[in-house]
Length: 375
Image 1 (cartoon, rainbow, N blue to C red):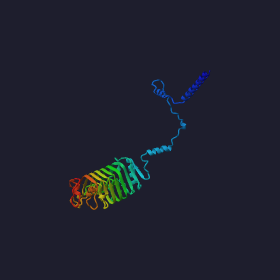
Image 2: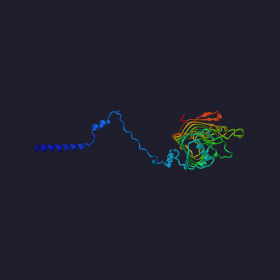
Image 3: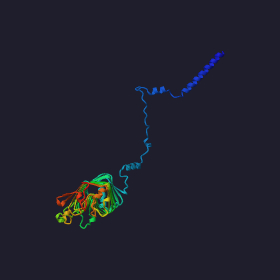
Image 4: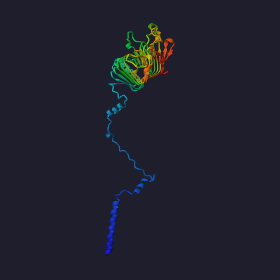
């Protein structure tokens, strides 16, 4: 009897242990093999995973867009928004450039210390350019941003009788008498017929101030200065001829000039005398040290000063040069080259002698002919 009672007690203890273990297993992680078999179930069993849909949004509860924020985004996308109209004039088309011309020349609006910034290439085909009056451009900077003004046709007209020489200039700016800067700007394909005017593609006449040129180009420029020195009778289609023509500045009467990384290419000039690539005639303040890393390529200068009994081809002063003509008439070509400036393809033609051709070596030094290092 005692043995049976002991066996029953052992059986109860075993059943209790099994129940406890079963309860613990129900709260443990699923069997790994079971998970893998469920994950790798074969396709095509006809069951599809339920598609989750985004909860619908009540339009009345959606946040409204602030109109001010939209306008701010539009202003940010405007490429001209970065320029303050109080300090900048933005030019992006020929129409805007002509509007600026009118504001200066007709309305006499002053743009002191402002920056005229170009944001696009400008094609001036079909427009006639009246040179800007520098009186309204004190301290102005023309920032080209690497853009080009092309097909620039300068107006052809004679100065009124009695006009002083310091007002007779033709160029992008006719007369500059105050500080001015040109940078990162190219003028390509421009032309002018000049009667009794100093001509420069950028500035016709400088009468004061400091003009600085940096990273600027003049390409394919033609200045046709009246050549017939003997025919100044206006009733017989005669005109006073032009003096002092160049690619950049025609006549530096006063003030200072500086050029850094500026270039003249494919330029043809004709006039009485004082013809050169950068400055037709310079005041006593201009010397070779005004030019740094500049170049001249393919320059043709046709002169007619031998029509006058006062000038001959064999006299000491030749009145034509490569980079500029100096007021002291001292040869400057060698020094310009020594300072890192270059030239090639420069020719001169005597209009009075069947366009007899000369090279810079013929007009190098008035103390004697100097061998042309570029020859």
